Image (tube, rainbow, N blue to C red; front, side):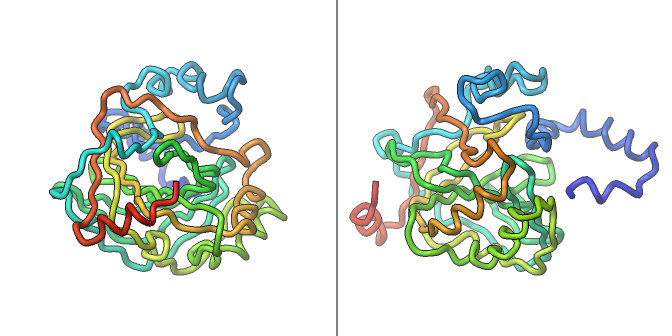
Length: 285
């Protein structure tokens, strides 16, 4: 588990760590909750998405924030931004474990899995997880699955790469995880080591991307997250999608937060000149 690394610390050290984190800018807001029993994705329920901000004081941003995610990434609202350039990321294979967090399945990296560089700041890859159906929409179209690659800076600021999937051929990265997903569905195991994982396989293909400032999509919905959503839509098999949804806890088979208001935010779109026509011609909305 993510908390296991602190089990051998003395009590005074744990208290000091918790005290310090309360004063680090964004330390709480850039973290996801681990207790899925307190919230759900059931719209209309007492603990559903529209009420997340009322459940806990520290979750208030879920209801009051004006830079919330996900959003509909519309080409009509996106401004061409060639100055953004190609994504500057350097990933490396690292040991990892697969974790059933109840509300989703995540691959947690235990070593240095590389970084994403944005405006001179390094955001270190910490974990990847999935949402079904997709949380972001492209031109009002919702897809079958979305992968989030979560990166954190040394100041605990988040940058997330999102990748969308439609039903089709099996996905290579998920294919390697299928045995672990099957065991989790059968035994409800919470965590299992998966050996060395190559993040490049999760990143996949596609150079064109959308960029905007938003939030985490689970409580506490901390804002200031730099979102990069790859424009090219990948494919996932129906079998792989079922493995992911069977592994999570009952009630979280559909774990996508509803769309949030844009509230005048800018959406930028980077698309290399030689790829521009090809991407738009091949778009499948």
